[in-house]
Length: 99
Image 1 (cartoon, helix red, strand yellow):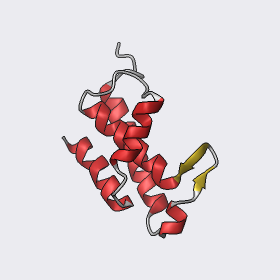
Image 2 (cartoon, helix red, strand yellow; image 1 turned 60 degrees about the vertical axis):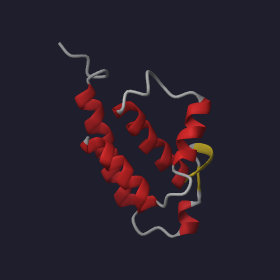
Image 3 (cartoon, rainbow, N blue to C red; image 1 turned 45 degrees about the horizontal axis):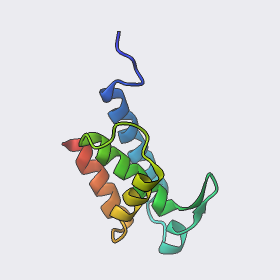
Image 4 (cartoon, rainbow, N blue to C red; image 1 turned 90 degrees about the vertical axis):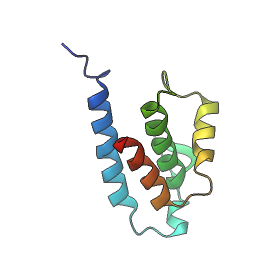
């Protein structure tokens, strides 16, 4: 029996579903809205949360993540997409799921 928590196919599907739902939620948001703080993630904006999730998918998909990211890894993940707008972040997230 496959442990569903560790099943890479399930994890990939959950991240794909999350990407699709988040993409719909933030589609059309202006720069101010994307910069809005997320109550569940103190100090993070909507953009930071999306960047982190995209980077986790990217790191996991490329074998660079052995467990939950450290605070330092999380900061680097958000910084990785520092110059990208939301469509570019979602594109990077989708690309890693296609590979």
